[in-house]
Image 1 (spheres, rainbow, N blue to C red):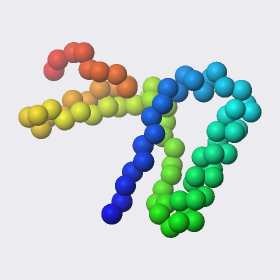
Image 2 (image 1 turned 90 degrees about the vertical axis):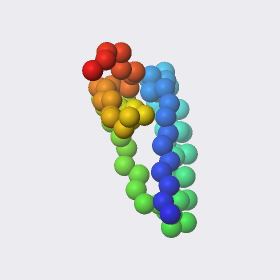
Image 3 (image 1 turned 90 degrees about the horizontal axis):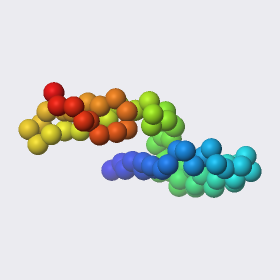
Length: 78
């Protein structure tokens, strides 16, 4: 069985961090990544584009998809 770990956060907060704070955060993620690789449970870990470039797909109860450009709610009806 495979699981996906998806991490969501406020990307704007990265701009507020000093280079030292960013480096410290990345060291923690590097340590986690090495742990899961060493445990043999790591399948992949590619980064995604920023959420501003996202396309969001939601499935309605009818089964029809709603496709939105960006990480925001669709406000127009189709």
